[in-house]
Amino acid sequence: MISLERAALVHVLLSGLVIVSACGGGAGGGAAPTATPSSGGEGSAKTEEASAAVDSAPAGPPKDVDCGDFTTCAIASDGLARCWGRDKEGELGDGKGQGERLKRGLVPGMGKVTKVALASKFGCAILEDRKVKCWGTGRIANDGKVVSDAKPVLVSGVDQVEELVASGALACARSAGGIACWGADEKTIGSPPKGAFKQLAAGFTHACALDAAGAVTCWAGSGDWSTGGIFAKPPVTGAVQVITGDRHGCVLTKAQTVQCWGMNDAGQLGIKSDMDPHKKLVTVPGVSGAVRLVAGEASTCALLADGSVRCWGSNGEGELGLGTRSSDERPANVTALSAVEDVCLASAHGCALTKQNKLFCWGSNAFGQIGDGTKERRPAPTPVLW
Figure (cartoon, rainbow, N blue to C red):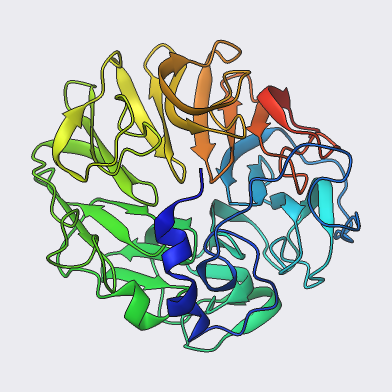
């Protein structure tokens, strides 16, 4: 389901970005990613596989994965980032700005990295020296300049990074010096809070931070997530993790249960869908033993202590990995997955890394973001060609 927030921000972001394409969630001035029907002509009118950097077989299995709206990246045991999916705006870091890549390819000019974080039109990674490089289209270097189809560039004023997150039009980094955010216009981003925080989460053009007491503060330039907005300061105490989609947020409790707030138009709070702005926390039914949460645009998944994954919310492209498609889903086990180590969600697809170092993706494959060498929609977890 395409969120109203993304559509509403088209005019805001267009005022500050020179857009090559109007496609993409968090991309092109905030136009939402199009849920493209799965067929032989899925994605761009002309299928063109982007030229990738020379990429011999990865030295070892994948050890980290992240999902962008149209792309996926993973880090191999050799510390090098490899990406696949859409490259229309340089999302794969090769500076080409054309076509798609249906299989993994190196992000050039990076060296070894420790973490990747993907937005819609750009991606970022933490380098070994704890600085950050970003690539693609937008204000990717935190210097106020808009670039298109850029190869990896160093992010200004960001150093000794402890955590990096990205989603939609936004990236944020946390270090001992505080929180810095970039990617969208400064008026859209708003001002990150001062003080010490232990964990970040990014939505389309808003972000949230968890402090040492387990309280959550969210911020944006305007709207429901801005300072004083109805979703900016949920009544959270003692949380151990926070996540946020475009219009909802969730926390993991010390008791390993999940509580969510915000909009529930696609069932992303784990209960029957409605159009109410839920300012109070909703306990997600049927989810216990959770150890990590991830959010997509309007979907949510919990990784459980036994290695299983339980998901709920929007499933129009099969982004919950349940093998089916629907407008909304109550919490359900992703039965095709077990012994999961890591999981990510984006606007219309998701991926999981298992303890056996196997990588699976599912959902929309309009631009080859599943990484199986095709552009066919995959509503169930599908092995990535690694």
